[in-house]
Length: 331
Image (cartoon, rainbow, N blue to C red; front, side, top):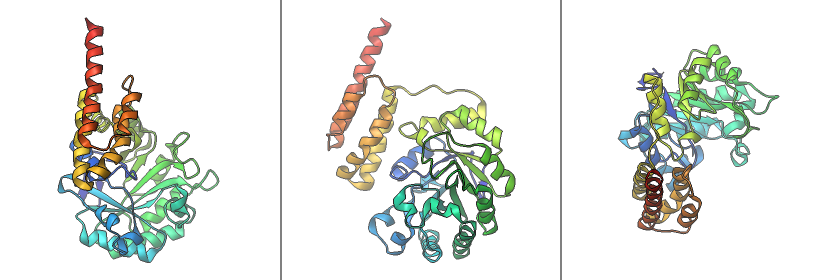
């Protein structure tokens, strides 16, 4: 069982904190599919301190999502500590996570995200400042290194632990790899063997089999699912079910996928209003449609729609066509 400080999850499956994806609408779906811990998308420490309206809205936590981790990022220990205090005192999150894995240039140019990976001493100072400023447990999500010549995952994890961090989530890729190539699971085992705090493995968990293999091969305490859950929260449920029973769950039908897609959209509309939500749901709808034969036309159509009911009509019309073709093929 995954336990971070005094917070115990009901299983070791964790939803990764994906930017532009892990808002309350999607996180709640992941929780309803059984996920042990859900992580919110990262928020800038300076934006929190300056009370940026959009950023403050990103700190909202639905009680049904708990336990939940809110993630912050930044490059200065004082602003990091101040932002952590806001999360600690003004939100109902259970865990404060610090991002030092984001590889995108606009983040690393600010000495944030993956830029930290080059300096274990700075990691220690930043994490220690945050830990001392809050009561809630502080964790860190990181990558294994900046590039193949600068892999300091063990040193960085030890610095996090020494600074009072309560867990480490480790993505088995370097910053240079971005999301390409293969994740290195060997480094997960090295880090797990080097610290006493829980380690959550991340990278190339695409199926329930992968999750089980990662846990068995590396000894990590939890397994983080990211891109594989996009448009497919059933992946989270199937993983949990497989880890607990060894049994394989059936894939959802196209109609079941569209039903959840619409729940997702309606929750997003409640959070952000129809105009913004429908635009944001275009990418999510494409993920829900992935793997369905002949989905390109409906994807293209949705990209030009602005209203919730129009999107629903397009999706269910496509599902009915699939069901009719399926029925005809079995006659």
